[in-house]
Image (cartoon, rainbow, N blue to C red; front, top):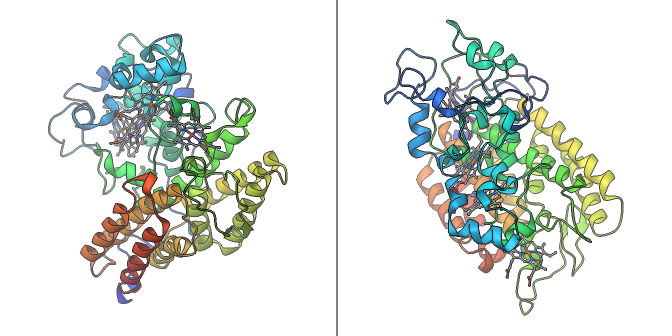
Length: 446
Ligand code: HEC
Ligand code: HEC
Ligand code: HEC
Ligand code: HEC
């Protein structure tokens, strides 16, 4: 127990204290919504700009970003993937009129597919997910960021996308890795052969080879990386985006059916001989047999976070989630309930961004994630998968604050938890819960 009482090295003021960060520019448009021109990656690649092979010691930024991205980052391959046999098969199964590398359905996520009029002379679609896909089209900010004393605020005003702000970053990554009202890996795409998307913001942020200083930018204007905040905001915004998809007239339906990716895949995809249903209450709602339930994996994570930040909000979210699940099964108005839940998710994301999350919060979150599972709420593979990535992110963060006595043991327990998820079709909640119980025991002894 002792370690939990230590003061974290980063300022850990009481919950609710605002961090001294740039004010979030009122919902910066996502890079692909910008009306500025995209100049093209070659403009960033010079060795005196971002294409240096060694770090610039006196620079605010590494200046090796292009080398990291072009050699190590999978985002450079996203367009090439559209030329492979799997993509050809997906396009053929969908009956797309053009090849995948020419279809907006694919290019919207696998490249920087901005309108032709906004593509500069040196722009190449084949470069994939490029600097400007994340940092925003550079037409205006190229000048401000080359000023002798560049200011982050001036760059943002000139169209630089605020990747340092967790909410803005979450919206950006989720737009391709989870989908939003504009673009989505629909159930039809999955049926045609597209892999199921599995995403947790902080886990993916850590897997992506970093082309920036993880321990904080040199410039005080830029927000520091805070892994647990990024994880928590990623959860709240995934709920918000899934509500937008549900509400979107373009995305929410598929013929007479709702869009099936919004539901738990394994509610439908499991052998009929395997009778799984048992009485079970979640969000205070008794789940009836034979009903396809909305995928609630991010909602469960979000509830754990909300309970730690503000128990009253946690209770409201629980009640709202129950109303939405009931409405989706025919008892209530889905639109009204989804709108209300989206508003709560956005409210929570704002609260997380403005909070400092201390050791008691971290411990509460880690145990809360486990206890949801021990109450039987990860009966679905998607919930268990999301909880596992979340526990990995949160425990890793706790470890980096030097709050663990035996990180090696915890790592072993996390790995054993992971092995119960190797095959989604053979997921057995009882095995998963047994590993969770072990992890809880270890964690409570730290
Ligand atoms: C909403 C965004 C989105 C859309 C739309 C989309 N994809 Fe993807 N696709 C992804 C992401 C994200 C991944 C990576 C999944 C991962 O590794 O987590 C991916 C992975 C793939 C893969 C597997 C790549 C590999 O390395 O194994 C193929 C093939 C693919 N997509 C083809 C297509 C084709 C063809 C289309 C159009 C019919 C398409 N995608 C539409 C986001 C999208
Ligand atoms: C997939 C999205 C993505 C792509 C592609 C991308 N970046 Fe980044 N970049 C980020 C994120 C996230 C950060 C970390 C947050 C921050 O500091 O803004 C970052 C940070 C940076 C920083 C440090 C900013 C600072 O003030 O500390 C620089 C410089 C940078 N990127 C340049 C580039 C260049 C050049 C390219 C292309 C070669 C590129 N990035 C491609 C997402 C991306
Ligand atoms: C414009 C769409 C787009 C955006 C924005 C985007 N990604 Fe990706 N990302 C992709 C696609 C498509 C792939 C799949 C590449 C492949 O499998 O070949 C991918 C792959 C990845 C991978 C490799 C996954 C693996 O299976 O190894 C990581 C990690 C990743 N992205 C993290 C991020 C993060 C973090 C952000 C936000 C800072 C982000 N991405 C923003 C489209 C995007
Ligand atoms: C409400 C029920 C339902 C849900 C929920 C559902 N599916 Fe499906 N799925 C179907 C049906 C029906 C088919 C069509 C089966 C056929 O063609 O015989 C299908 C087909 C598929 C196929 C193609 C299988 C084949 O044999 O070609 C894939 C892959 C797939 N779904 C993946 C998913 C994923 C991933 C999810 C969750 C994100 C999901 N499904 C959620 C009902 C569902």
